[in-house]
Amino acid sequence: MRIAHASRSLISAAAHRVVFPTFPLSLAPNLNFALAFAMASENLSTLANNNEDDEKYGFQRSEMYKETLAGTVGAYGRHVFLCYKNPEAWPARVEGSESDLLPKLLSSAIKARKDGIPLKTNLTLCEGREGTDFSDGDVLIFPEMIKYRGLKDSEVDSFVEDVLVNGKPWASGVGEVLTGSHVFVCSHGSRDRRCGVCGPVLIEKFKEEIDSRGLKDQVFVSPCSHIGGHKYAGNVIIYSPGPDGKIMGHWYGYVTPDDVPALIDQHIEKGEIIEHLWRGQMGAADEEGGKADKQNLPNGDVKKSKKKPEEISTQSDKDNVAGCCQGANGFNCCRDGSLEQNSVSEANKAGHEKKGLGKLSCWIGSWEQSDVLTAVAVVGAVATVAVAYSFYRRSG
Image (cartoon, rainbow, N blue to C red; front, side, top):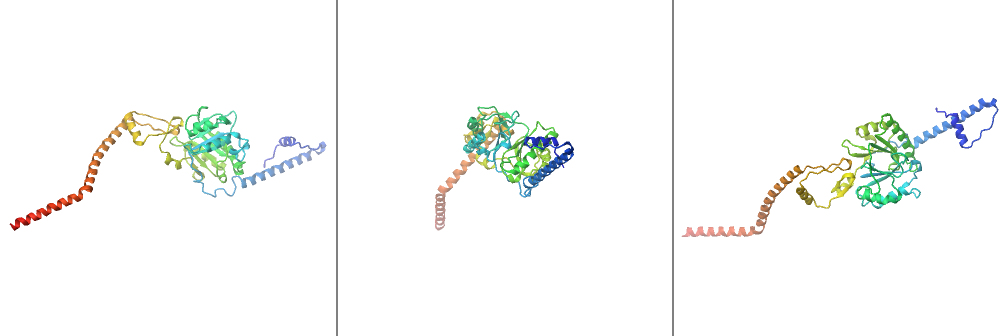
């Protein structure tokens, strides 16, 4: 049992303006016993409340592990995090709060332009810590792994237009490349108490394990706002490079402090999925079919090609140059000009041969359809003449 320090309790009492009566020195031992008993009772009450919270809202609640987690993440292609204050300051619906204008403006702008944004985009708040790498107003974008500093209310529309709609660098800011792995733990207690109870405990455990492994400059953990699925708390999202270097975003649920070492050692260090906790991952499977003509360009730019496929192929034939573009997420569209030209020449040669055969087939098909009846009539007439001639010869 943990007994609070006497001086801390007295300080706390003074802070709450609790005045203790004056006793003679002869009563001092009894007074010390009374104070110790009062403090022990208070600690027992706190412990009981904590146990009750854990059973109702923490890692011991009855709903834990009751549902299958896989498939509980909706499809999306990009995740934007706005660094803004801390979980204690976030209202339940922070994106609609009149007192928190920046989150509201950014959320509204993304919703208003959703039809023009190529990728389905999630917006979440994470903690902003002044004087650190993530301060209020900073924006983190995944999977592009880019950070823009100090977004202001008046700049929201231009930011959404430049970066999210057009896929260009923000005209009013300089993008900084993010490195390492980034862990976000839902700690939005005002939205749901389960996240408020589980989140802070998981964050402390992550920090402890990160420090013990010497990964402070490689793995970063932050509290975040509501991400969906309160009943799966603790909820964790990890953005980190996969085996091929591509940035992946994996979601986990029912995470407890005992699971944190495995998430670091297996998922972050080795790229192995913890299957029984896995909810899903970032991806845009529902949108790829209609956007297959997009090309990733350097700095995460996205450009739509207006040429038809055959025009693109012809232009490549004419250029006959080796080219390479390196986009975000390790995407590489390098090609060798000589090999491409050889492939195109072979394809053209085969195409010409097929074209000649095609013409012959079409001519034969057309002749058969238009002249078949005439041919049959001619053959019949010739046969009739031959038979009549034969009879004539015999009768003569």
